[in-house]
Length: 459
Image (cartoon, rainbow, N blue to C red):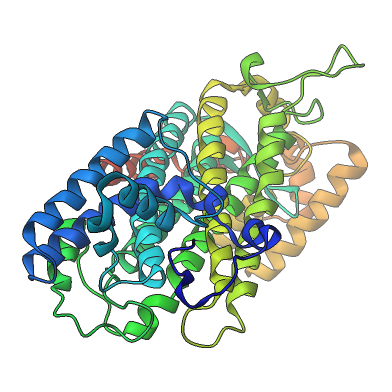
């Protein structure tokens, strides 16, 4: 008989059992469920709601069940529906009727909310630890490439010279924001909702603060209806995952492009590449491509949960059972992608000579030529026009700007002097951009040092 079956005259159909059960998904929360139940039992005993000896028996029984589960000795059943009733059924089987007192003053509605919050607190800490490794990898690669001049792009067309170190530090900023977002999310996950019961709280004199302290929560929920029906924290977690994956996908897209023979900026390590079943010459960046693809999967998780929640009245509804699969999948995907990406990134070879060759042909110093004229008093809009006409001329003559003769420069403006060659040298174009946030070596190194301090302060 179901633990909730008192008012029913017949058993549920097997098809309903199979459809209704969530144990295949939520069984991974067994540890959180047991932790929450132990804290609840201890509080019930402390408050005199059940006898102290009964609370002790329940806690000892739960410890034994945890050991059985981790030793592979416990079996979960579909008939018990979910992790909560599976644990309770195992407890009753182990210690008898005393086990039936565990569920006093709580509901599965507040129990599952508690379990998911406990699970996400741990998952966010794990993700933050992996993010720290990713951020360190970016700092290491950036430091190795503070002098590796490469084209910066807009519209995927060569635009202005930057360094690869500066480019990597742009992703450092993105992933640093992701770390901050997960930390902010953790603050809203960190709320103890047990005691909300089904939706209206309880008449028992609970000590909710005692449970919160035992489980490491910083506060208790303020409204019992919100306590059981809130899934904002889960939506926010998946949103953090989705934004992170968007950044990861953008980075992987660039790595994929750079890895092509047309660009040739990098070469992937053999251990993080795959081959073709028919084309023997192929060396494919499958890790980066899979991460790019899995981004859509996490977006789907976010849209799934938003859609589940959008029409639900207060308070708990069975629809919310669909939350965990999306939450688990998003977190698992993020962790799997980081685990594969970091070593792939650290082992990829930067082909500096090839990058140097690819600096040609994009007129990366055209803006600097205009800035040169503006610095000598030519209005910038006029300087922009002159530089544009010089680019058109160079295209017709198959030349770079720095290959023009002094006489050719003079044809476009009498303001040009021999110092134009030094001014538009790509190294100098980069180094002159030494304002805060710029690609000059000194600025990038300063940001790397700030990044190292940031990592040291990360929890």
